[in-house]
View 1 (cartoon, rainbow, N blue to C red):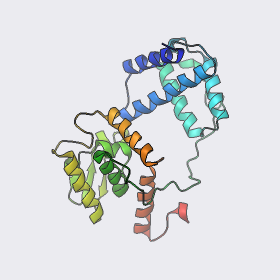
View 2: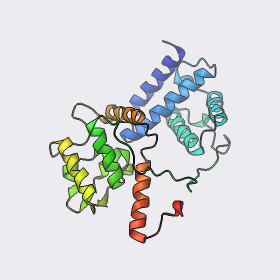
View 3: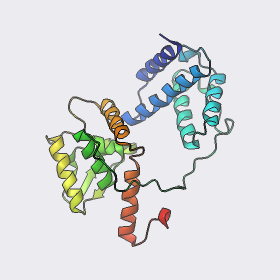
View 4: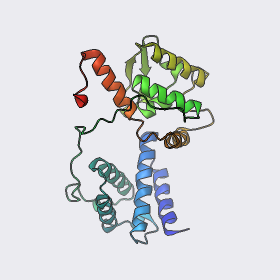
Length: 250
């Protein structure tokens, strides 16, 4: 195998032995660390086993990312993945603090409107993904919620009940069902799921494999940020409840 393949393989083994967190967290962590391995090899380092990781490797790659103008939030997320990996390989002290790495604070106040209104879903060929996106749009669901939801179980007449195991941080929540469109797409979701206990992940797929299909469909449809559907829902509800445009639009 090549240097990159050897390094990535050693990371995968470590992650397999330490698989804490939700499926989405694990997938995001793995993606960040595969990126780290690729960029480290691109920079000319010959590290084949993550157990030989040193502080110079981490600093080199993070500086490389900074030179490519990655957002502070992205840098923080990737550095957190590195800290997790180093913790599991007994190298907790080799990742410098964010201040020492000159990683700035996250920008919590949005500077641009990321809402995705009137999306074009005509290129979405997978029926499971299409219904998932419509639920994201109509109810403001997060991606993981819309994939894991069991629509028959969630339908509580006037309320969409999201169970903790489907939600971020294991915190269940409720979303009002107050439009005919919401009711229509919830019924469509039931048809796709078929049986009462089924989610919107096909029976022959697991979450990670279906997430890959989801991302592939997004790329095909030219949708770069489906989380914008949630932004659009929030802005729409804000206007319905207050009569005012959301602050980002005002």
